[in-house]
Each structure stands twice: as C-alpha cells, then as structure tokens.
Image (cartoon, rainbow, N blue to C red; front, top):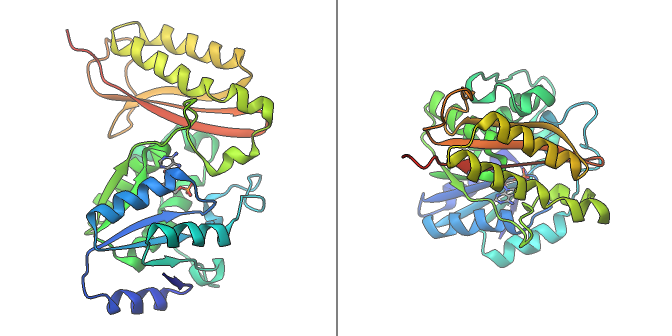
Length: 283
Ligand code: AMP
C-alpha cells in the first residue's frame, strides 16, 4: 500500500496504474466499520482503491472539535492495508491549502437549512475539500455514506453542477446492533450517553413508519422530538425533506413521495446526526 502525502505523488501514482478503474473513498480517519463498508464497495466495483485521510480544517466552525477530533493514523493505515487498499492520500493542511489559497464554493439547494442552520460554513468546507480531492484523484467512482445524508446530496449536486465525470455512489449506514450509527465521534459519548444514544435511530424508525402509513406528519414529528427530549437529547432538528433535492415538504398535505427524515441532536456535549428513508405506502 502506497502512502501519498502530496498532490504530485497522487498524480504520479495514478499515472503508474495500468487500469484507470479507480474507486475513491474520502475520510477524516479514525476509521470504523462504516468506512470499511465504503472501501469494500469500492473494491467490488473498481480495479484500484484509493482512500484519503484528511481532517479538513475548513469544515470545522470556530467552536467545534478540530483540535480534539480523534486522530488514529497508524491504526487507520494498518486497517486499510488489511483491506487491500492500493494507496492512501494523507496531505497536510498546508499541502492542501497553501498560503494564498483563495477559492471557496457556496451552494444553495440541498445545502440550505438542516446542518447549515447550525454549522453555517460546514458545506462550503465540505464542497471545497471534496472538489479538490476529486480533482486530485480523478477516480471513476467516489463513495459516500448515507450516514451524512445531506452531505451526500450536496456532493452529488456539486458533481452534477460542475460536470465532473465521476459517479457518486452512496452506501447504507452501518450501525451497531443497538441501532446507533457508527461514527468517529461516538468516542466522545459517556457511558450514560451511550445508553441513551440508540433512542435516536429508534425514534427515526418509529416516526418513519407512522408517516409512511399515513399518520399526520406534524404530530408524529412533535411526538418524536418529545421522546428524544425525554431521553436527554437536545434536538437541533427533526425534519422531513424530499429525498433527492432535500427541499422542505409541505406537512399539511398527505406525504405521497419518497422523503428523508433527518435528525441532529446533542447528548451531553456530543452532537449526533442520523436519517432514515420514508417511503409512503400508497393506498
Ligand atoms: P468521515 O470520516 O466521518 O468524514 O466519513 C467519511 C465517509 O464515511 C463519509 O462518506 C461518511 O458518510 C461515511 N460514513 C461515516 N460513518 C458511516 C457509517 N456509520 N455508515 C456508512 N458510512 C459512514
């Protein structure tokens, strides 16, 4: 497995490949079985797999966890080597954003609301890093988790808007048997938080089932939020959106199209996000 630290090393590595069938998995490291599922999907459909590990400073707000974000590079590299990855790109912040770096990307559409209401610079940080990574690696396919559903929609929209010749492949969320979605940030949860955390997905499942079977969405979401509060969550949002555009849904009308229910809530100091498909049962 090659370790690549610079953009020119990535380009050289790409040029050395006989096949140009390359799958790419961008990550921030502290790898777990959710990342592993993306790598395995990439291995199944491409001759070569490149993974990036880069804790992107541009997607962290001033009061967020950039300095404390878990960094486990040695373990991550051993994990990726075992999975049979061809190369890992781990640029420094200075390599990726040298002095004088001046470009930013701002998006409307799927980037509006939800995470943007609580992390105003998040998606411009995500867009610039993903755009730069995709332009550096130039894979055929890039793999993203449904765990970060709004991010997935934002990246897919950006790639369409910029005509990048790359397929964006989405992979289902990997969960613990309790239902809790795996996340690098789960290490922040205290024992008590851990006991409450599975309620997030349980509540999503319950709300999704009720909305899909025709119950009034406003009431369902109201009860869902109350249940989360009862289990010690401070809810940022629990919102139903159209599943591709992420446009708001008119909750006063019966829900008849495929939607996504998205949630963000804090348990203690740890902010968790999750989401679920809502596919109405048409009568
Ligand atoms: P991160 O390292 O948290 O930036 O995530 C890198 C990629 O892994 C993103 O596309 C995430 O959506 C994806 N990912 C993170 N957690 C999971 C999970 N539990 N299941 C599936 N994909 C995940």
